[in-house]
Amino acid sequence: MRFQTPLIRGHLVRRWNRFLSEVTLDSGETVRAHCPNPGAMLGLTAPGLPVWVEPNDDPGRKLGHGWRLAELPGGHWAGIDTSVPNRVVGEALRARAVPELAAYGTVRPEVRYAIRSRVDFLLSEPGLPDAYVEVKNVHLRRDGDWAEFPDCVTVRGAQHLDDLAGMVAEGHRAVMLYLVQRTDCARLRLARDLDPAYGTAFDRAAAAGVETLAWDTAISPGGVSIRAPLPFSP
Image 1 (tube, rainbow, N blue to C red):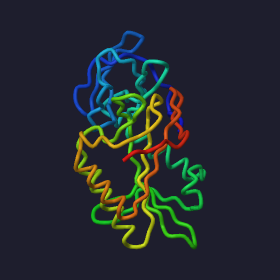
Image 2: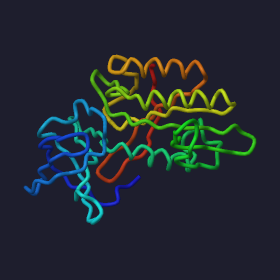
Image 3: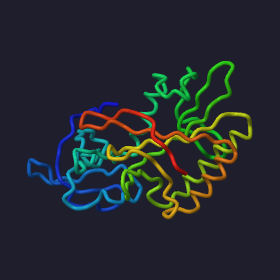
Image 4: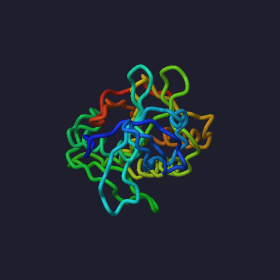
């Protein structure tokens, strides 16, 4: 996935709220940037953090910039935009780059299912059970090379797990795919201390037959792409 417009480097002044941040660009200009991330973003909101924003000239948008990346120590990166994983995974699924799902030729995004829900991707192929794939963005790192999910309480995330379990009960496949948008992590686990209810919902879904996949990403100011599978510890 390539960013549509070349990114501009700057430094974070503050994150005002879940969807608004202030950034001083390297040019010296200070701008307000959309923060496309409703999570807690633990460890990624310190003033002075090097960040990269994407400019836009869309008159329909209130803000002229969107926060996309954070620059981390050691030449590493973190992706901020929670809409990016669906774009990255969609490209990978269509290219049949995820071995566990490579047999599926039809990839449909945002399909209604369960009760008042939409699954990120519905995969189908003659002779195979449909596969319901939910994608979660991961950018939390607190300890060593562990990536963790979630970074705050996510009632919606727990509901998605229950919805996927319901699809398994109906004879379909269901997959929770965690995409780690950090390049300084080598494995993934659940942050059960931050949301015990999500951990319980995960255990319930796994017992019902919901599959789990974890992948990391290659990240640069040019774009984000799926890279390799990661070990997962529930």
